[in-house]
Image (tube, rainbow, N blue to C red):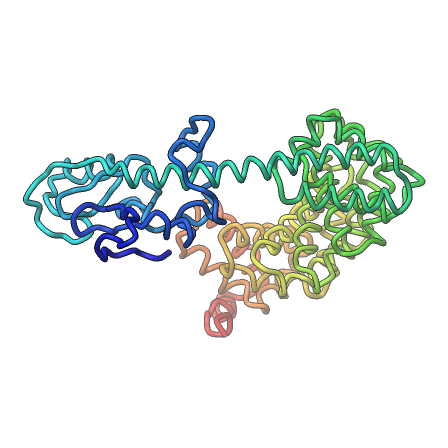
Length: 452
């Protein structure tokens, strides 16, 4: 944003506004409007142009995401000024900030560090009017745009009541675009029965083209308990599962997110997500390395599903354990913690422990994660290894030690981890030592190979 320096009185009689007092910034109001400091897109600045008295603080809060001219920013707080005052050096600050500066015993200018010869502060009314006018115009433009968006959302809702076929798809696309960007449109849809109307378009005979747009809209909205109960109807869930398996990657992710939202409802029952088709679709999404967002969404829902004990055996039965184990080395920290959580939960089942034991990469992949990512991941990995080693102490504990587990456990015990985690590491270390003589086991605990 340009800074306007003093250049004397204009010959054509135009007014120059001194924003900062002696030595401060001087703004030519006409030039400021033209250059965008006032009025943004060339709006007219008028001291009484705002029909209603707007609250400056409220406007600043609601317009926090826009770029503000630097001359409106307090050098102390780096926030827009609401009550600008000027000190003797010509610098302008927010009143509360400069008063606090003085109360801390400073008698210098915060910007120039000059010693002050006068501690008085003078309200900068010109700058206040500039700030107020600029925010007023931006705020009114925002309000008008918001009202336009709300009106368009209402029009599309009315259109959806009448049209079918391709016209319905186009209307849904437009509504989806609006609600994905504008919070006011989301509220308008919710307040005018839009959620019920949109949800009613999901059913056994709904095309995937319509269904994908409907679900893309619903994941943008805040669903109340009644809406969630409505969407939990078998025909609607069945359509979501079909699209999870056959839709585009965006549709798959949205289906996953919507099912996750519905699981938070009070009427949710675990049988709803026990469908093998749903679980298989989730695993396919999780294994698609081309789309990291899909992996995260899939693992998040799978974790939520595994919180329901009745579904865990189904997750194991579709081969989730070895597939997740194979993914571990390539997951980012967030996805890795989710995958380890799922494997740890499944390890509480006999079938889950057996699946972990027979998977050849369980022990090497999980051992590598100890003390590598986070304490939470270490804790989950330790629980998985304990479950496997206790299931077959002779076979699995020996494999784990050969994979470097003993040395890793010593690192855990000597680290700053929580005492419970250290105790578990000590117990597992003791279990591993039973298969070796003292001398051989001590050699297995050396860190060289583990570090390499």
